Length: 102
Picture (cartoon, rainbow, N blue to C red):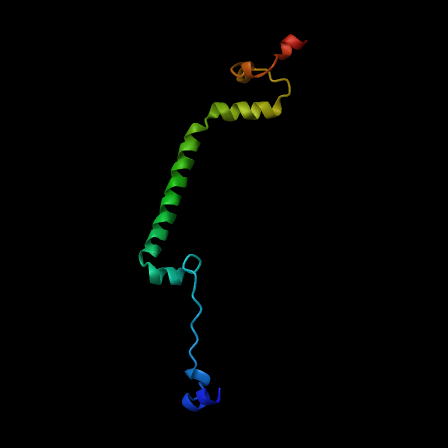
């Protein structure tokens, strides 16, 4: 130790170099942008594609849900014996019709 201190002066303060902390590019956007400049554009494209996909899905499901199904559901909520013209098409789903039970 005595020989080393005579050869090399001790390093102090600012002169001591420490390696900066390496940021994880998968969690740190600025680190990812430095490694891959296209990552920002790709992320924006992903967001736009997801929004377009959800809008198309909402449009498709809105068209699929018709007035008949809504009326059937509302009638089913109100009536307890499941009778009427709304339920004739769905009679095969029921185990037995109310007329047969009485």
